[in-house]
Length: 336
Image 1 (cartoon, one colour):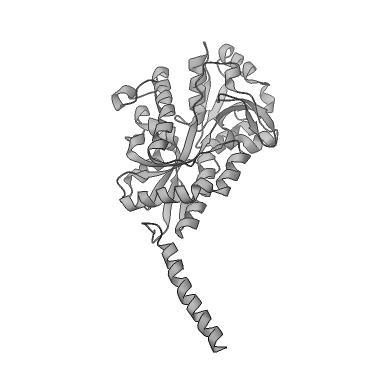
Image 2: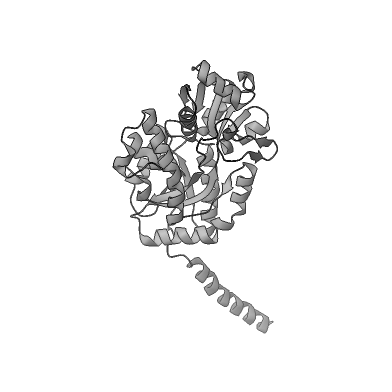
């Protein structure tokens, strides 16, 4: 019995240093909860993604990541709060990279994509859907209404949202298009407004509409992608290029980020978590598969380079539509 007890004590003693070593595997271990600001309303694409990513970060670092929704001004209010927070690694932001990359062009916030350490999770597809009572069976009918009636209300999450981006792309690609822009404090409120019939059409992300499409409460008209997209439990949604062959179809990258001037050990730790945890996350894989998103656990320069394509396209869409406050070329954003 004494020998058994001695072995048990020895085994515990040996295990403790191993556990301690694992706990110290990252350069930075947060000593208190980390705030993750979602600059949009609860339930939307950013909120959905951020809560899954927060759970993975908690598992990896052993500390809470508290998601706080701070909607307003097309996501710029919450993002500004992160910029103004202490540079200690305890305040992160979430969102779409293209939004943050265009805030300066829109005059919403003095920041650019290059100011942030980028950590992406998924790439989403911009989508246009209609209330079943709106009378649009496909994108062709909707496009005809945009060109003839010119007063069709389209709900989006705001001035710099995915919905606004796709609608401005349609406007640039087709002659005579106009629409009435109805803005909401996030993708989820915009989708619910279309479901309720408050607006006949919603332009946002497929991840935000997936359940309503599966439930036949929205009719998907088109996705802004090079090829049709298959949504689990529904079927194939046609590409907008079936009607507008030359419309751009960039991937819309979503993720988490914090300013570049935080302590280097925070950036090193986030990089390690992305490589060791996020890249193989079953939670994020399941989320992406169920909502026809693309799992994209990239970070650093690769993340910047991929997101920069959509930033350049979108910034000049705003400029050409007359909604930009600052010319993109004056802040280093050149036309593609």
